Length: 255
Image (cartoon, rainbow, N blue to C red):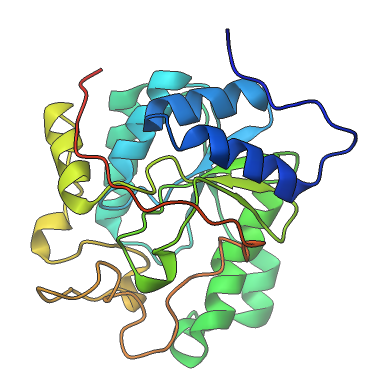
């Protein structure tokens, strides 16, 4: 019998996240995603950059339901390799509802007419080209699936399975406890294509002007906004504070 959240009178977003975290710690990634999809039918979507590790999460999504919407932000500043990787994954995984979202043309003309806002103010550029378009695309969804992992940065070290976020939505991080070796093993076992830039020193890929190669021993995302205090793009609103454990899965299952 599928698990259901306990019935309560108007449970808060934080209460829902706490109940889900208590349940999800004992499940594998596919089961977390499957149960979340069952709890929020028609109101769940995944966000994906189609970056160097995105194939793994998207493979899990396709295995649960290829009709789950996948929101992809085409900022106009991406590597051409990322766009080609997106097209290949959509075809190979049979994803049926990938939505490529772009910044509003009038807002770009007003706030970034020369196209180099990224050099003057990276925060403002991310807000214009990522956060604002994504917010519009996520209207109507209650649960958002992400591919964030705890090992990626110090800020993500205590990332829970489920967050109640400040935008009034839940964020599901089904592979939060996976490390780089687990992700790569899953990719290889399931014969998923590698991002063309992965072997060129880019473990994390964003917009081309704000992405640098990463040296051995650095955080995976150290090449993002190199030389700035900035570490996130603003696509993931502030969490309201749930905490979970820090176990790391070591097994890989072929589906």
